[in-house]
Image 1 (spheres, rainbow, N blue to C red):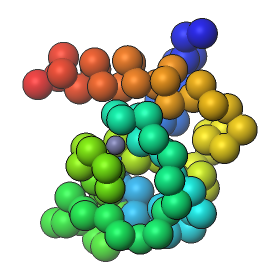
Image 2 (image 1 turned 180 degrees about the vertical axis):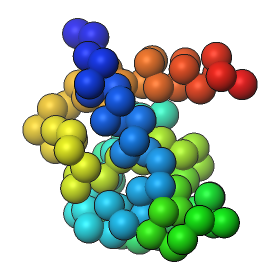
Image 3 (image 1 turned 135 degrees about the vertical axis):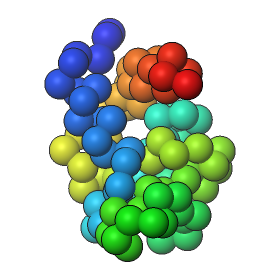
Image 4 (image 1 turned 45 degrees about the horizontal axis):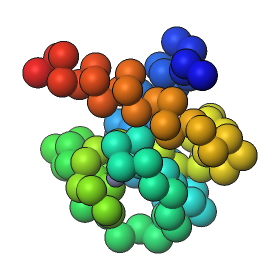
Length: 98
Ligand SMILES: [Zn+2]
């Protein structure tokens, strides 16, 4: 199943400047390595020139900035195919921008 445009744009927002959202999340998922794990705060951050709550997390497993917290408006816990579905449009889109 393909991700729809609305889902992709919500995911694109969720992986950026997500420190506040991740700190409000119990679990997080990575669109790059397709993993779900506890959002325990042990992230490394980029975008640290921004205010603290707008820092962007690197995945604890693959160190790519593709982490979505379950506090984001996406069905992370209930939809097991979500990360798979988002991987191609998000990861491929970044390569195209580079
Ligand atoms: Zn990852």
